[in-house]
Image (cartoon, rainbow, N blue to C red; front, side, top):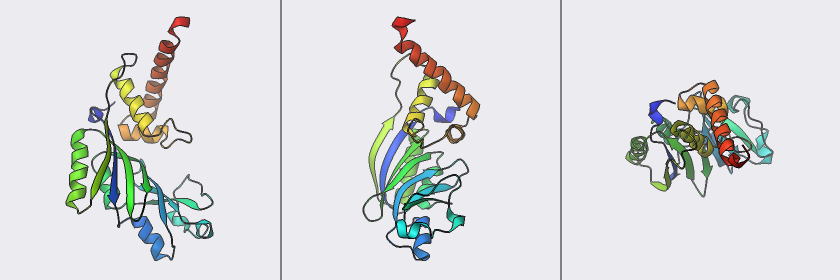
Length: 208
């Protein structure tokens, strides 16, 4: 695992974002009552938005805006764009978006992982410098819990858990998470396999 993620944090912030490009693009096309359901970064550098556009409008979304590999729901659709100022500020500090959720008005809650505390401070400073009002809801630092796993294994498990790798359906896939961490999917898979084996051996140690 690259040294860049030596001191990772899980951050949740609330930002009033009136500049969401995807909302603006859909609004310009005549879409109304739009809501951001989720926002995630991708390994390609773009940003994916899950937008609730309503059942009557979902089929009208232009194909060129749709994110590849994501199916439409009855009223929601995954869209892909270059991202807005808030998203790109987060991504510019080697962080990656886990999720984003529209609240009331233009308030959006962003959940993301940062490799260091300095990266977190840089994101907040840049957002506030650009005129955004930022409310930090959560700032959780990785801390070792046990000596069952190596520090590297435990850190990767923590990042995978916080980023939704173990959710169903997964919020982030093996290839995408590996790209964010700067390692190959094969390496990530092997770390998780060996770590899982260690955890199971510890759990079932009385039977071994």
